[in-house]
Structures are given as structure tokens and as C-alpha cells.
Image (cartoon, rainbow, N blue to C red):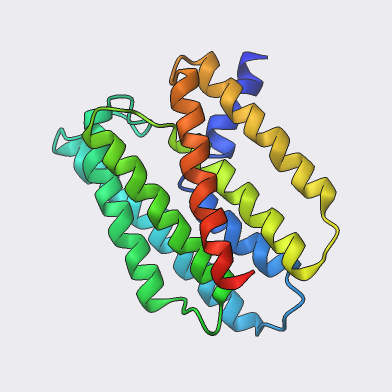
Length: 201
């Protein structure tokens, strides 16, 4: 059971959630999208949200700024979250715009606000769960897509509800977070996604 719980922390790592949202969007949207455009967009998102943060992490680790990719100390979160916010701004500036891809554009706007909220909480020494923030925000995005396109994806939504509980149990099992840190992580992931629905749903 402990391996099952620990696996959730890797499968639903917060760095993977933006890319997962983009892939899920292209899988379920009825809109026509050129295949080459999809591939280039997915590659760009993977590079900005995965490759660059990993390179930045190893650089910060060599400089002694962070000790682990889990960022267990709240003081270690400040610079990585600042870098994350800058990368999200880059995505909003270069890759998506609110006219051609409003769903994905505002998905990343919400992720940016969630990251800023986590950064501000980190500045006051509160360690909100980034894992819970990521999976809850993605779940809300998928629910919104289901409503917007009137697609029955209840099985998928049900899986992501299960994933939210799986991630929370995983973080509690490893003593990575308290109940309050998980709850705050959940809300700062969900609330920005709900707010931006007014702009595209």
C-alpha cells in the first residue's frame, strides 16, 4: 500500500499537470486543430513546464538553494515558484492567446494565479500543497471542458476525483503536509480555475 500511495506523488507531480491539461484538452475538444500545431504546442509546453524547471532545479541544487525536488522546506519554494510564474507568463505571451485558444489561455492564467498564491503563502512561511493544487486545478478544468463542450466524460472526471484523494492520502502518508496545507492547496488550485470560467465558459 505504501508504494501505491507514494506513486501518486510522482504520477501527479505538479510539474506534469499543465502538460496533462493541454493533452487532455486536445484529446476531447471537438474543435479542429492542425496535427502539426498540436505537436508543436505540446512540445513547447513540455519544454517550458518540464525541461526548463528541471534544469533550473539542478542549477539551484548545485548552488545550495534547494535540497530536494520535493521542496520540503518552505524557504526553498520561493525561487522555484518565482521561476514558475515567469515561465507561465512566457506561455501566456508566446504560445496561447485569449482569442484563438481561450480555454487553454485561461487555464494557464488560473495556474499563474495559483502559483502566485502559493508563492505569497510561502513568503509568510505557509507550505501549501503544490501537488494538491495541481491535481485539483486540473480536475476543475476537465469539469469545465465537459460542461462547455457538453461531452460525457464522467468516468474521467470520476478518476480525477479519486486522484485528488489519492494525492492527499499520499502526502499525508509521507508526512509531507498537514490537513490544512492540503486543504489550502486544494482551494488555491480550484478557485482560480472557477474565477476564469467567466471569461471563456
